[in-house]
Length: 219
Image (tube, rainbow, N blue to C red; front, side, top):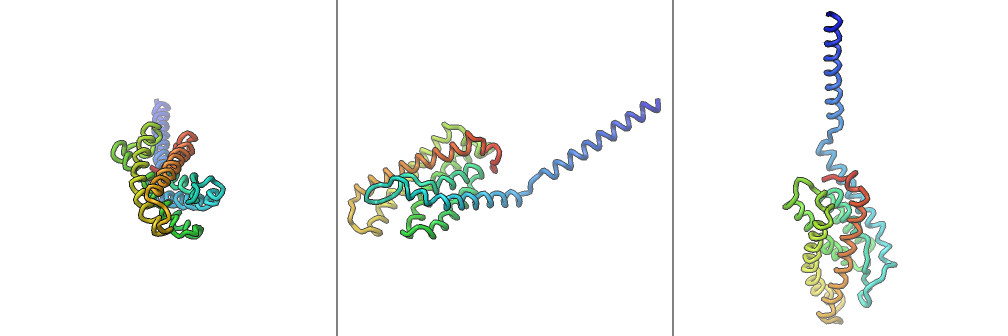
């Protein structure tokens, strides 16, 4: 009889110890908000640095005649990858940090601003789409090709609404009245269409099918 009581007490004590250990492990596993911010900032800094390291690639990419602007620019890929993994905060920090860094390499003095204005909609519009339709799932919603493509099409249209007028205003200021408005609009459409396709496609293929988002997501 006493042996049964002893075993029951022993089992009860063991169960309590197991629960306490599990509770302690859970507490250790929890990440503080401050730790999350540090990780997000580190990811943004890494992506900004990689974008700057990739900028020389654009020098060997086919370019639009006369304007000499690359049809394929990997700099923005890393900014959008930062957003897809870490959310809006990480994406925007990577964009602004990368933009500032580009000023040290860009001889025109205006190129980074164009890059910022062109890339921002490719981050902000998908974020708004997630926020208003699937807030609880975060970036996971963008793993859906249909949802992602739809969001990026809207982002592309917003990009055109920003970049076409910007080019119409800035190109004559920078280069004089050597090109007509039709010429500027045509080339702005070609450039932004080409780069938008790559900006949407390459980051998606890197982040989602490979499992990068699954293992490193921050939102």
